[in-house]
Amino acid sequence: MGNENMGKGMEMQRHDLIVIGSGPSGRRAAVQAAKLGRDVLVIENRLRVGGVSVHTGTIPSKTLRETVLNLSGWRERGFYGLAYRVKKDIEGKDLGARLRKTLDYEIDVLEHQFARNGVATIAGQARFLDPHRIQITPPDGEPVVHEGDKIVIAVGTRPHRPSHIPFDDCCIVDSDSLVAEPRVPRSLAVIGAGVIGLEYATIFSALDVPVTIIEPRANFLEFIDREIIEEFVHDLRKRGVNFRLGCKLDHVEIDAQGWPVAVLSDRRRIRTEMLLYAAGRVGATADLGLEACGLGVDDRGRLAVDPVTFQTDVPHIYAAGDVIGFPSLASTSMEQGRIAACHAFGAPPAPAPAFFPYGIYAVPEISTVGLTEEQVRQQGTPYEVGIARFRETSRGHIMGLQSGMMKMIFALGDRRLLGVHIVGEGATELIHIGQAVINLGGTLDYFVQNTFNYPTLAEAYKIAALDAWNRISLVPQMEDA
Ligand SMILES: Cc1cc2nc3c(=O)[nH]c(=O)nc-3n(C[C@H](O)[C@H](O)[C@H](O)COP(=O)(O)OP(=O)(O)OC[C@H]3O[C@@H](n4cnc5c(N)ncnc54)[C@H](O)[C@@H]3O)c2cc1C
Image (cartoon, rainbow, N blue to C red; front, top):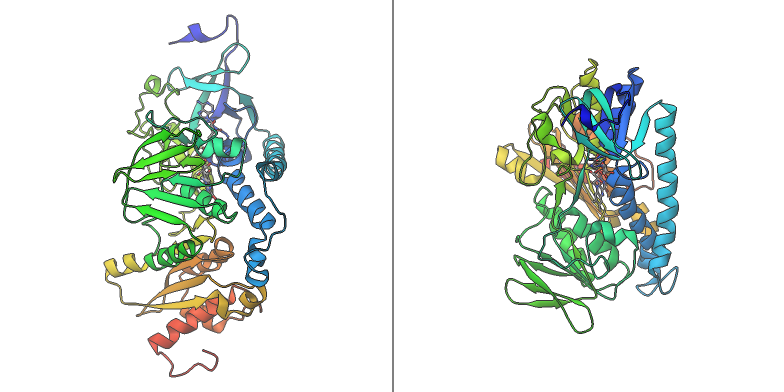
């Protein structure tokens, strides 16, 4: 393809940077380049900016979670009993109302951010014509062609929808259709115990929906410390969540009432009103015309990049965000986009810190930073562990918390903090204290010597550190340990 794709007499516009996709990585790349004084165009194939993160992923799922926890009175049940509700009979429309308001507000903020920074945006499907020229097909109108000196591919992913699953986006859904018109089913089967599957499984379980989680591997979330997963699973089983681990989904049948029946590899049949298929996502690269710029993808549609600069094999084309694979988080995607733009325009950022936090917004939350106990053992580093239970903190008593724990891992030699692992209320916020101490090379002494606000859940850091201190027996006795 060549110039023939341009409208007759149309002048091709040139930009310092073209970003394809307006999710977290695209947005950060665009704004960073604009702040470096560059002319930037963002192409987005949805009508409004924000990407998967805002329209179907991070923000919708977190908003649903917050709505469910509020309306169900989840956080108050420790005091008022399991039957306590803020609203009786919670329906789909209760979930949808808050969702729409939150998303509208979020998109408004993003549009303002683009405008404030002078970033041009255009709605349309982007496709490479050659390594510098991109054809944009708007939803209604003629294709146009823009040329970029540098290009960032930030197209993200879409849910994997295998052809043998009869998706109808009502009873058999993926994570996109689940939030398009949220509803509360009478029962739910979740295929895939990954982050997305577990988040939705536990959100619906908090609404007292019976949930079955089906996962082909015997273990799940293998990058998380095993003790935290044991605590998490214990919590979920206590609430009646069923796990079918080590069992593959063979196929899905529809029964006489129109309910899906998940037929497993061991021939067990699980009939529920809704089935959520959450077993993987694929890079949204199929229609990008990557062959026109000499780039290929792996079997999941993902691009390979230099892990430091985020350049693809074609040096002026960068890729960032979920389209390059792990860790596939909005948080890390933003940083990748920023680093790519800095590199592209000769403003290399300081090297990224060693550890970033991982947040899983299940109910209860899990968050982790640094090494797991399994990794520390594998490295052969002598270590000790300290544990705090949230019910040991005064804040936990006030909040009526009955579960939640923090685990800290310290090196024995220099008492360096190696890892922090939390499951329970506020885990995704609390983790940042541990993140700062780890990345600044701090030790057990930081937690023992510093004063923490009281009463807070952050006090768990002190309790866990004192627990480790006692085990290490550096001092014979601590007064309050
Ligand atoms: C249910 C769910 C929950 C999640 N929860 C969290 C969480 O709690 N915390 C967290 O950190 N992360 C979370 N994530 C992950 C997070 O959403 C992603 O990591 C993040 O959105 C990736 O950003 P991105 O920059 O790759 O772009 P994306 O957000 O994937 O957006 C890419 C955009 O590019 C557009 N596009 C694709 N192809 C083209 C094309 N050819 N032309 C023009 N535009 C195109 C797409 O339509 C899309 O709008 C969650 C994801 C899901 C699905």
